[in-house]
Length: 425
Ligand SMILES: NC(=O)c1ccc[n+]([C@@H]2O[C@H](COP(=O)([O-])OP(=O)(O)OC[C@H]3O[C@@H](n4cnc5c(N)ncnc54)[C@H](O)[C@@H]3O)[C@@H](O)[C@H]2O)c1
Picture (cartoon, rainbow, N blue to C red):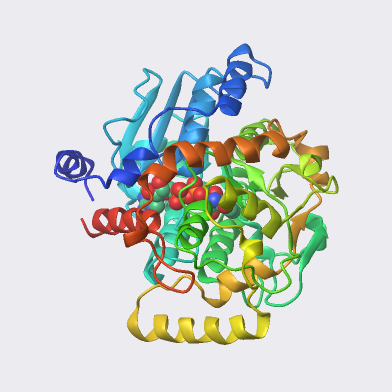
């Protein structure tokens, strides 16, 4: 796809209102404190010329903002979605609309970069199947090629811990070293498999001395402007269709979006020729600031706080759904999805994510990258709930909302439609 064609098509594309809602540079009170600290240099300097792929996504947008707040001279925000009218217009930010699957587009974006944060991806379980291979594998291959051609040597890769999940068993306080390495024989989802494949391309190139990279993964990113995790669950809760799954005791580690951006940014400092950390995979979460200082929260308790915070009925006022029943429903939903192509919310992947333990000890990120969360979970979670109450709730329309096992949230549908439209061009 040519960039000029993309540019001229921008004005023709009508942005869905909810997508626009999520794109303004309007920070929550907790993020405003972080912005001030960023500007003061509390967390150190950043490279002059930065590139962020997926720069208009949940993480990418905050990453672009953080790099600017920390003093970057130019930040290229590269995304398949054109910048909406209300996006932050700062002289240091250059928005480039293009497709990762098109090498020319990517080359144009990475030209002259000191470091590329390769963060764009087909994320989550709800996208059409062909997105995953195209964006996560071919897209990463193109980032690699483009960097080699343009002489860019540093890449920070946004990875996912689910590439290390096994199809059975919990992740209950594991370190990176406790988890299986990639490639695995099988993966919990197409998303995880293709993210692993992308990472393996980088690993090979790094071993061959073609580029240098570090992979940094968050876990369940939350925060203002989240467009996947909370909206999908809150929609189901808002129409009374969300129930606690199984015994409701799953332990989960979370990552505030600003903590993830911090982890991604400081990883760049460990990318140099003799670095012992090149090619490694790290997990950054809110760590010891969780309600359980080992590094986790009880998932359903925290979710219920958000549900009640929206004024919806407490999840504890309803009967929990037994695990065996959920297994049957998930199998039926997956079969329907396979036959009709329609994505349903409760597939096996979602069920597994909502019932297994998923938390990590972040000792490697702490010792190798010097990572510490800059937003405490105890501040970040209530601040996020407040943001959703003020910004998301007024847009919530129960008449168009999806149920637990039904279609996915309008939020996600809007996003998929936009990406699909652009990929067809
Ligand atoms: N959100 C989480 O909980 C989570 C957890 C683990 C890992 N991650 C990783 O963090 C990264 C960011 O995730 P996110 O939550 O911000 O997702 P997101 O979907 O909000 O952002 C991804 C961005 O990539 C863009 N994109 C998709 N296809 C593209 C293409 N072909 N060309 C150019 N841009 C394209 C999208 O338009 C979107 O703006 C991803 O790499 C993801 O794998 C996220």
